[in-house]
Length: 153
Image (tube, rainbow, N blue to C red; front, side, top):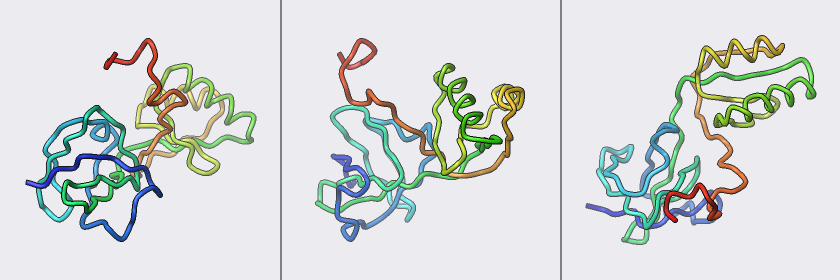
């Protein structure tokens, strides 16, 4: 079975070396070791030294030297708009205060589908649209930095 042994971030690996893709929803894109099935139907083992977040466009380097491109699966999300940038920033602050994963999608915010948070956003004057779309949130300013919350310490 092929083994994916290293993750290279989008733009930091040779696209032409991709031999396959793997499409995963957000909750399945933070892994260390798991058997996955590529979009072609071919199984492979993700075998990393530590758990990593996988993002759209990342390349999983195989032990053969080729790559599998990571794709974000469409899943139920909420797209949030507001009447202006100040209102949208205020909504983003409230979402961040709840430590929810958030994606900046152009002039909108995108979060995982949650009717309670949707009601909060609407209460703050935001406009909510329920869609199925890829969810690739910000991973955080301290991602990869060792600190008190690091379970690997």
